[in-house]
Image (cartoon, rainbow, N blue to C red; front, side, top):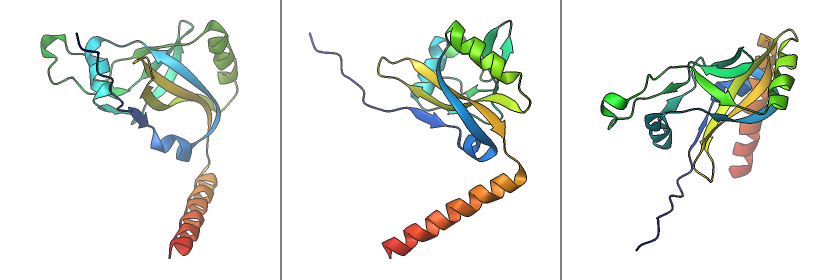
Amino acid sequence: MGKKQEKNIQINIKNRKAEFEYFLLTRYTAGIVLTGTEIKSIRAGKANFSDTYCSFINNELWVHNLHISEYLAGSYNNHEPKRDRKLLLTKRELRKIQSKLNERGTTVIPTSLFVNEQGYAKLEIALARGKKMYDKREAIKEKDTIRAHNRGIEE
């Protein structure tokens, strides 16, 4: 009777455009309702955040357009890649997020998808406010100066 082998592979898929496009105000970690083939695809790193957003439907938070590729060995049990998925948060967190969404210019966006120590897929979401064009230019300038400073130290 052998022990179950532990896999130390860290799955962490990030939404890289989120910090560039938005000011991230508050972050929450939410569970996500998945089918069997979806979790297998996530563990293989096959998820994409392009055009992903969250919205409330009947006082429940749902994530839309999260692309989880079909599992290659899934046969007829496979899932739809871009189906809407329910997020699992406490009632208090849901009420807090819903009240903040009533403010103008505030939205909920997913920032990263990861698998925790227990093997459950979690989605980190953030309350966010959109950046203006001049804010984006400032972010680019800051990154360039940091990069130039780091190059100067390395040389």
